[in-house]
Image (tube, rainbow, N blue to C red; front, top):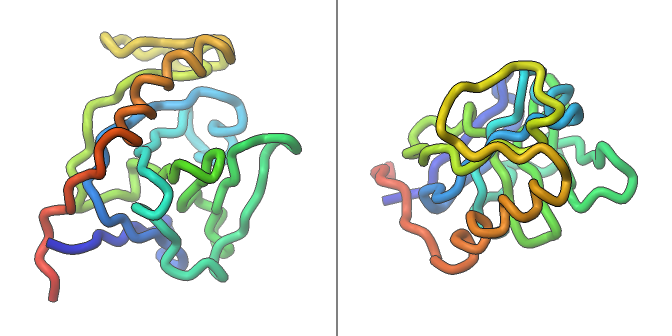
Length: 156
């Protein structure tokens, strides 16, 4: 059992994750579309302290909206998302970087009203801000309610 390291597209920056993710969501807001350079951001949610940057000096920290509770950590070299902190309580790691972790099914799609691509699945879709907050409450409470299980990897 051991920690799993994620990495950005160029390999310059990464995060360490100490537990298997239990919650996953896709965000269709225009900010995530720009940061992820994709139709949506696909995030795995952890308690803060269960995921952290490998080297914080390789990360450029930004807020895409001045008063946002989301602090995004982007690779200083390629600009890919590495880790984000929400309200100082949660850490969010891009699902696409989490090789070696069992990715849970998607809990919900948020800010779906801003989508650039329709998704035809049974995942709940929330379009407006208040719907989004309500839709994330249950999944985020699951992250807080249980400590998490260590990743199934052998330490060298």
